[in-house]
Amino acid sequence: MSRNPIAFRKELPLLIWLVIVWGALWRDFSPGNLLFGAVIAIVVAKLFYLPQVELSGRFNVVRAGAFAVVFLAKVAAASFLVLYQAIAKGPKVRSAVVAVPLRSHSDLMVTATGHVISLIPGSLVVDVDRSTSTLYLHALSIYNEDDIAKIRRDVQNIEASLIRIMGTREEVDALDVERAAGTGGMKA
Image 1 (cartoon, rainbow, N blue to C red):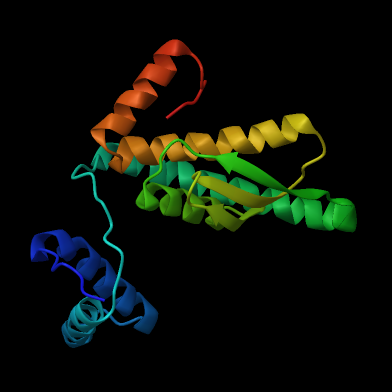
Image 2: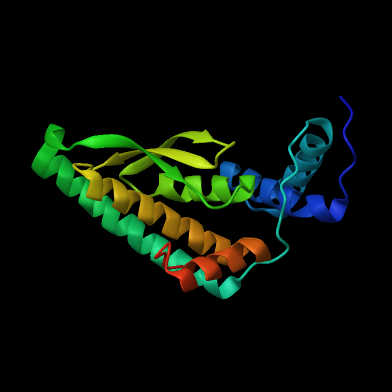
């Protein structure tokens, strides 16, 4: 299988990310270890087929900072909620698998949304349907339709925030239209 060469400039974010992951896995960010990680990243990128990640070319640092703060607050709150449920309700806690359709069909957006959701205690992505951009989540505390609607809203709000941070201009414009029309009721 032959693939078209990818320009170094387009591949650079992937290589940087792989080097950061290498350093984190080894818990060693010394120059020598990072240099070796860069060599490994280049070899992996050149030898193995990795699907090209379509980047939008935009990244909003201010929104990313605000998102990080909100994300950490959600993780802390959800941790205490799961602890409370485990102690107070134990096996009586009901859970369900909930399908959540996303707006974006970008692999990057779907993956980022899924990872953020999985990092918040109480929910976990169990499957992804790439053809429809649908995440299937295992979520705790699902007792009725309102709980299902809330989890869907929460996931779509996270997706909207990620789109505003690094989505394409078209995706951001679609969010603005949705907000102006009042159809989504999403806060991003």
